[in-house]
Image 1 (cartoon, rainbow, N blue to C red):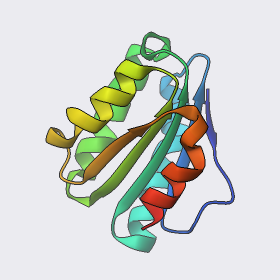
Image 2: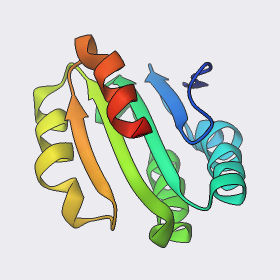
Image 3: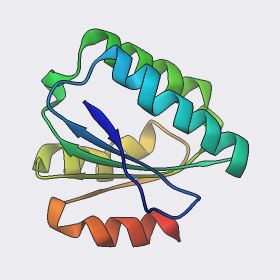
Image 4: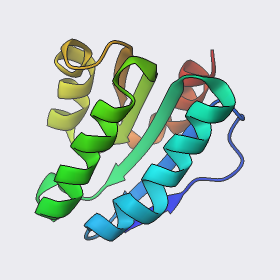
Length: 121
């Protein structure tokens, strides 16, 4: 399930992923908010709090996530992934930066506040 994170600065979209993530979650939670952020700000600062394993994302969720990423490819400014999964944190900080034009950084769950500060800069 994807849940919108409230109380973030206007230039950030925050999403909390828990349990199973479906195509409907991407279509109904992520995509409308990304589209709105691009309209309002012209760029994407994306905070993902990931408290589920990657295998809990359905094939449809992965596909729609890729499509929306490509749709706004030039708009990505910053991506922060906050998780207790060290491999995902490492991937975000070291590999993901080669996949999107913006900057990306992984944070552990206890560094959520630090992640919000970093992405808001």
